[in-house]
Amino acid sequence: MVNFMGVNSVRELVQHVGLADFLEQLVDAMDSDYRRWEQFDKSARHAIHSPIGVIELMPTSDGHLYCFKYVNGHPKNTAEGLLTVTAFGVLADVDTGYPLLVSELTLTTALRTAAMSVLAARHLARQDSRTMALIGNGAQSEFQALAFYHLQGIRQLRLFDTDPGASAKLERNLTRLDLPGLQIVRCTSVHEAVRGSDIVTTVTADKRNATILRPEMIEAGMHLNAVGGDCPGKTELHPDILRRSDALVVVEYEPQSRIEGEIQQMPAGFAVTEFTCVLRGTAPGRRTAQEVTVFDSVGFALEDFSALRTLHALLQQYPHLATPIDLIPEMQDPKDLFGVLHGTARQVPTPAHPEALPA
Image (cartoon, rainbow, N blue to C red; front, side, top):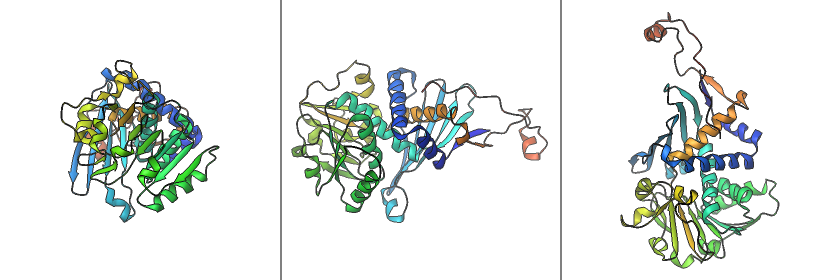
């Protein structure tokens, strides 16, 4: 039997662990995995585009565990009462090829994306950052807000969305929680939200080249967490922001970001830094308090690997949250697959799978 975690199982797991602790475990797992970058098989995700959306597969392996994520992006979906992004994934044992865990990744992707934003900000934002503008207040916004509140010390959130109802939803959800010291400011424009912010997070959904942030909005010392531009033809930053002489542009995996990130707007020779180099100290992160830093975040398969192995490790503590599913035939004679169909094969327990790598 293979363990399955659905939406309710992940929700209950986060409640058992606590949101802040769960996010911190994701940050720690991604920090560990990005530091062993060379061990991973890396490729840009495989995308099938349509006029109204994209469906992607994101695989990777460290030679011991393998994972993939199926994920879609359909901005029109909300008008039909559907999510813009949904996902599921598999974690498998490389030695046998057997899956260890099948899991929902819609909630988990939102959590890991927020955790990755925090991990990048720890190396790129000013450490005294306390104010964040959050541009785009849809399905991802609470996760970003709470990750930066709990793990990065943000105490003022400046909100803007072209849909005032989205901002009202975000404020309502945050005010229901016990978040001492958090001030929420709803703004009437991007410019108003950005003014005076230490960190600017853009997480908009429109599938188009947009200029959410313009050069005149950017102040010295800002850290830009550009999350929403994550497929070809979809951007959020004016290219002149990237061209600033005092700007450091950091990406997850350059070959993928050249296709899907903010840097798709730039020529092939435009210099960027991969995050692993900053994390391991082979390239500088923030150098001065006045520098402008940009995390051109598109989401990379290594982050899903970190999230899936974290889920798998936590299931050792909370095994009741997994549902066994008969995804793989369990039989005494592995050559008698037809016997499973015919009802004559003897069923036997599948050998125990190895534990996940430490989270």
